[in-house]
Image 1 (tube, rainbow, N blue to C red):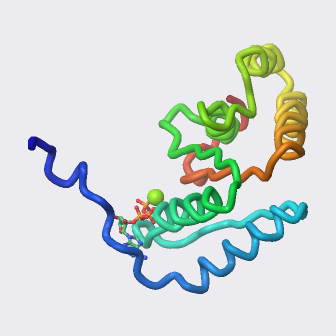
Image 2: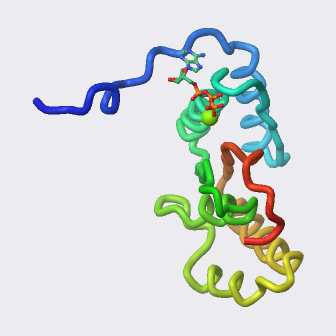
Image 3: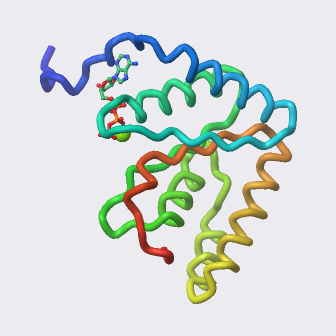
Length: 145
Ligand SMILES: Nc1ncnc2c1ncn2[C@@H]1O[C@H](COP(=O)(O)OP(=O)(O)OP(=O)(O)O)[C@@H](O)[C@H]1O
Ligand SMILES: [Mg+2]
């Protein structure tokens, strides 16, 4: 077998994080029951934020939740680019091509873009529970996509 060292390896088993995972499980449970939730993961660089998000996504998916994940954005990204990328994923198509065209058409009026996103997210979440995971949203600082 041929492989790139370090790239195809499974991540080490998760250590600790019991309290954080309990918070995630509680939030996912409440969301599945119909009460929308928002969790913010913050900390020093390298302390395991992306890993925790991945664990949260895995656990939510096991409970039948659709998971739309985005980030980290590239240097030209913006908060909306991160969100739109997450919502356009193959398995969780909250946005379709015509939605993306409509977002582009509304680019001069950001609040109309967010209104469209809110509407599409709400419509999708009415059909099944949805977890949106946005990693590294501290990086994008521009206000427009
Ligand atoms: N609780 C944990 N148990 C075992 N391994 C972990 C744990 N948390 C993180 N790791 C491992 O440590 C490494 C760094 O974690 P991670 O990439 O999640 O950090 P981060 O906080 O997202 O970093 P960055 O600031 O670069 O975004 C990864 O290889 C990850 O799998
Ligand atoms: Mg990270």
